[in-house]
Length: 315
Image 1 (cartoon, helix red, strand yellow):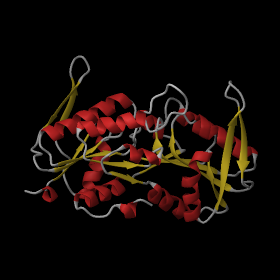
Image 2 (cartoon, helix red, strand yellow):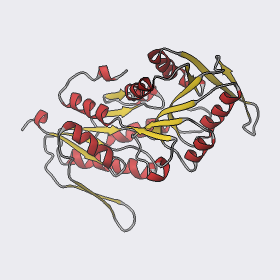
Image 3 (cartoon, one colour):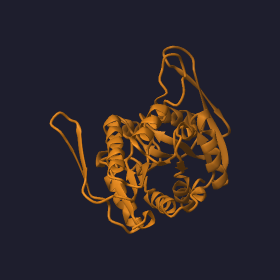
Image 4 (cartoon, one colour):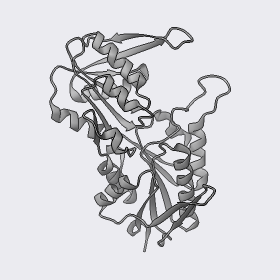
């Protein structure tokens, strides 16, 4: 049986539920794999079905605990290559270590490049990921990278809400490109939160570029980690006369008490995708809403498997 007939999808512990939904979209059964730990904590892994000559996809987000999930992904790739899978694609809904993509100061690592090297050396033939924190990370790989976006799912959700008097806001200068794309598709204006550090105590003077008084605000970002920066930006927007404030971000990292910060900041709604699995304690409130991108990922996997164009998903 050739590769085109042998599509197999496996999942790591970070993305098991996500992979179930992707497999439902593809009308296939998720690959049988056992992942456990040796007494000293090392990862023990075995694939319980034949993969020789297959087109194998491994779905695993590199989310907290980041190092555990990264090493687990590397071991799964190695296992499939040694079991003679014809092609192994690492499907990484959330690509960890993406924020360390350059030397912002002396004597610091470029960890995103290191992770790219690790994935390649482990045996990955291709990478599929969603909303990289820095798009240039694609260039860190010497293998094909399909970088797709969650924006079609987000835009569909907010277009159906039919919010009036809307303005899209980028919470920092680095997110202008993403925010501009949302503003164009939602047919509304764009504003920017300009944050400038004023001293070693990390006090910030915040300015708003654009007119937001009396408008409903949609803040757009690729991820929310601690929630501090986005909550501070919301406070300033309210001081400048904003009405209801929404936040949409692809990756809900939500470390520590991030959800509590979002609630205290009085967001009308915080919309994320399911690239990172959240426990019920972070979703059991009126603020957080999770949209699924599993159909988008499933379609990308189908196209890659059938050697069809994926470029139409890059919007």
